[in-house]
Length: 205
Image (tube, rainbow, N blue to C red; front, top):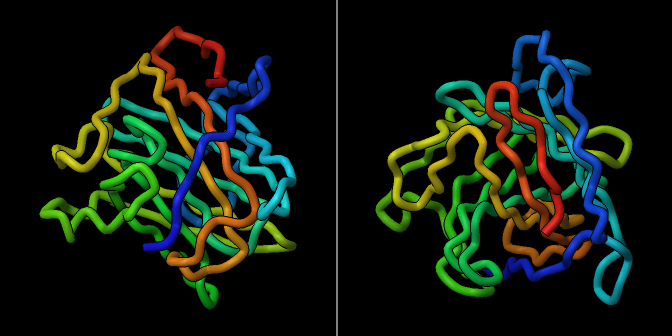
């Protein structure tokens, strides 16, 4: 694949993480309810050479077994996040999503090199561990929602736990072709998996 991510650190103050009490049932319908997720933050990718600039709102919650996430990006192309790369993109557990001809598509991938390639886990001997997903595009924005186990047991997926801080890379493209390089925005952040009675820490890397 031609797609790759590179570092773009958020401002020192970090994105503001909003916390809410969850009172809505999670549904992968591409509609992010006001109280569907316990945490959210907006990540900004500035306009620069090769990038038109854009935002990604990440919303998430966990329970004892699962991670639920919504990605709301300022694009009608693909959206992607990568968890815990060892260097640049290398070893990142990557989720890519888009809405193609009105139908959501979500891929479970892994990056084998600093700038890719990243391929489906199944091509490396792993498994597809996206249990449920959905999406919707409207007015220049696209939402992709998905659910996976905190610990899938797949060596190409990162194992998560309540209270953990997760390094994350992200990117947006204006094409639904997953082989097209990101050209809207890119960045890095820290995702905090809130445990019971525990608040977020600084969410910027």
